[in-house]
Length: 419
View 1 (cartoon, one colour):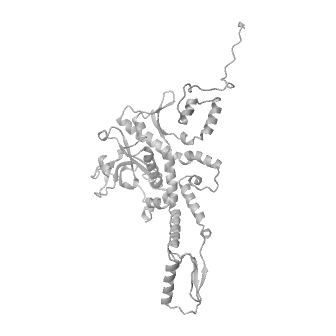
View 2 (cartoon, helix red, strand yellow):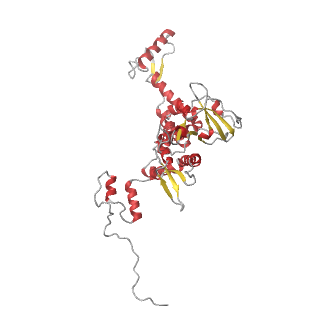
View 3 (cartoon, helix red, strand yellow):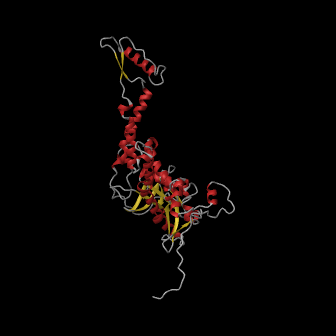
């Protein structure tokens, strides 16, 4: 927490009157269960879907634009806002920053940014991501306004307090609260619990054995005291169970005993179907098409292309929209309050989704050539794409002789006739 103290956090208790009510108790918090962190570490389907969402959002570049008076826009490449969306702080790139923020949103339905805008601590603005599980207390001036955010300090056991004005926070929807959202993991606990129990059963089966699944019978009237029963059980477990010397071999039974195979197969237990159901359910809760995260039962080339096109519209579009609004309507006005040269009415930040929706080069070249009606790339541009040196005269656009730009018909020569 040393860096948090250097950012101007205070150790003492905030002074003032704060609202502590008006929200219902979250019943899920009263149920002792695995935390979101534990589920993410242990459940592969939850990790697959959430990391897929975060990776796909973080790989889209953020561009800064300025609106012109005629309604057009110009990309801004040399401002501190541009630098901020490339490297938010000294410790991470914006990809890592955005990846962590979207992961927080997936796991907690909330992400928190700390804006370091104190000129005494640097020559530019910085953004830091605060994991939601660091937060131990929040103080509100009303149900909608966060005044103070308390972070855990493992050394002093007392919260480190951040002013709400320095916090940019997004929380999702909950029917019980206007202050915090409801994690999607709460809706997945029953499905994830089934996977935990199934994995635990398979682990016990392979660890404790025996490898031969079944039951052993013996004549009802055959003498067998407790000592003999205990000796046989210990011998069987030591020889044929786990890593015993006879594992996988043919067991030798005592006189009158009979081994009857009895074990549910993977088909009977519907292991494959339950695994697919778990992955499909997690993907549906996070509004991701299951095909995009590896469920390929009905996948083919054409529908995967369409799913990829819809990924950044129906699935990830709302997430990216929320981030854009925070940057444009929360971050930029706060930056403009200190730097009056920044006009948030003209400057805005936008995800460059087009770069992720582009087709292959062959498809782009074909579509562009049809739209232009003629060759559209010079030889030097093509050589630069293939890391070849430029040629003298290669900047001229070569046009085949059978292609010419249309020109209007010339006016007929002669004297004009008065009507």
